[in-house]
Image (tube, rainbow, N blue to C red; front, side, top):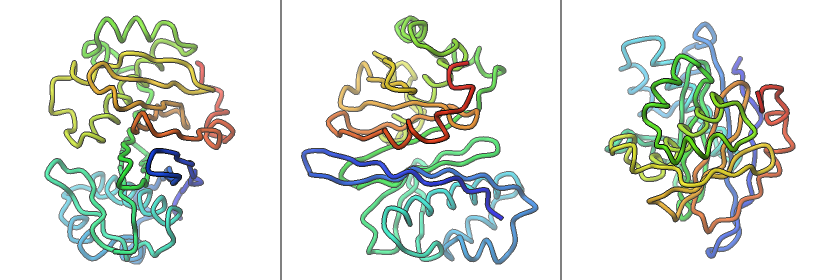
Length: 251
C-alpha cells in the first residue's frame, strides 16, 4: 500500500482574504505498483506520460509526485484522484488542467524515496522542494553559495551540513514559484536573511524581496516552502507535528 504521510493544512491570510494550503508527502516502492493503482491514481493523460518513462525509477518518482499532489488537492477540496489531471508546463512545472471545480494549483518535488507537494490558491503562488540530507552533495551546494549565505548559515541552531541543505531547498522552492527551475545564475536566488522560526527557518531573498520561505526537517529530508511575503501562514500545525519532533532536527 502507499506509504502516505498525513497531509497538513495551512491557514493563509493575505490582502485577498483568508484561504488555505495543504502540504502532503508520499513514499512508495516499485513492488507496490500495480496496474489498478496506476489507473486509480492517474488521469488518462498522465497514464500516457507514465508509460513513456523508460525506467522504473522515473516511473516511480512520477507516481509518487502525482499521488502526493493529488492527496494535497483532495484535502484542499474534495474530489477523486483519477479525475484530477496535472500536466506539464514549458519548464516542466505542474499545472492542474482538469477537474474544473478545483480552484487550486500545485507544486511538486521529488527526491530518492520520497515526493512532496503543496496545493495552494492560484492567487497566492507557492513552491516546495525537498532534498536528502546527503553529505556527498555538500561540496557542490557550498560551491554555489555566496559569502552572505554562508555567513547566515553559521548563525543558525542547525549543524552546518543541515543548514546548507536547507539553504539549497530554499533556492529551489523560489525557482518553482518563479517557474524558472534552476535555469538562471544561482546568484539570482541568493538568500539574504535566515532566522529561526520555531523549529524551522524563515528566509528572505536579496533580489526577490516579495517572497519568503519556511524551511524545516522532515524524516531526514530538508524541506522548504516558498510563498508571497505578504501572506501570513500559520505554521503551528507543522511545528506541533511529528515531522518537527525528529531527533535530527538540530543535528
